[in-house]
Image 1 (cartoon, rainbow, N blue to C red):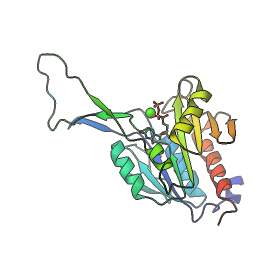
Image 2: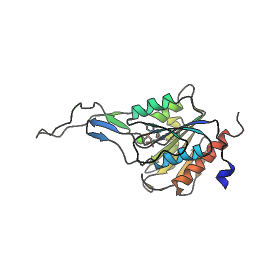
Image 3: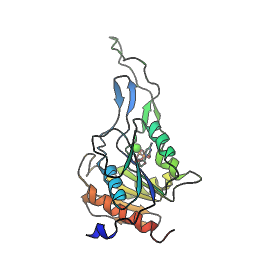
Image 4: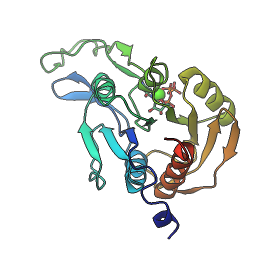
Length: 223
Ligand code: CTP
Ligand code: CA
C-alpha cells in the first residue's frame, strides 16, 4: 500500500545502477572474481524501476532475472563496466552496487597456462578503474551519486573516509563480517554530507525500497 502511493514518483528520471561482480580473465579458461550474488543491486534496480525510473542496469555475470522494465547491459570486466556506464550518460542518478574487482591480471595469457614442473606462475595484478569515483568526479556528474561499501572493521570511520575519497553523495556501508556476500539480509550505516543514520537490519528488498524512497525524496519538488 505504502509503495503503491508513491508509484511513478521517479518517472522521467534516468538512473544508472551497477550490480554483480566483475570477472577478470587470467587466460582463456581462468579468471579472478568475487562472491557477489547481484541480489542487492538487482533489488535496487527493481525498486527504482517500480517507482517509474528509467533504470539502466550495468551488470556483471549473475544468475538473476532482469527486473521488470529495467534495461540491462551485461559486462564482464571492470573496464567494460566503466565503459558501459559512461555510455549511459547523462543520467540523473547513479547507484553503484557492483562488487568491482579491485585488481585484474596485468596481462591476459592468450593460451591456457600450463604446468611446467617448475615454480608455479606468479600473477602480477594492476588496479582497476574506480567507477564510482569516476562518475562522482565527472565535470557534468549525475546530480546524485550513491555507493555501497563493504567493511570488516571501524565501519563508520572507514565509511566516512571512503565517502569523501570517492566523492559520492551517499554511501551505504555494510559490515561484511556480519552480513556476508550472498546473504538475504543487510544492515547498513547510511552516510550523507549531513550525517549518519543507522538503518535496522532488513532484507535486501526492503533496503532497496528504503533507498528508492530516499532517492525519490531527493528529487521531489525538482523540475
Ligand atoms: N567501486 C567502483 N569501482 C571500483 C571499486 C569500487 O565503482 N573499482 C564502487 C563499488 O561499486 C561500491 C563502492 O565503490 O559502490 C565501494 O566499494 P569498496 O570495494 O567498498 O571500496 P574500494 O574503494 O574498492 O576500497 P576497498 O579497498 O575497501 O575495497
Ligand atoms: Ca573494493
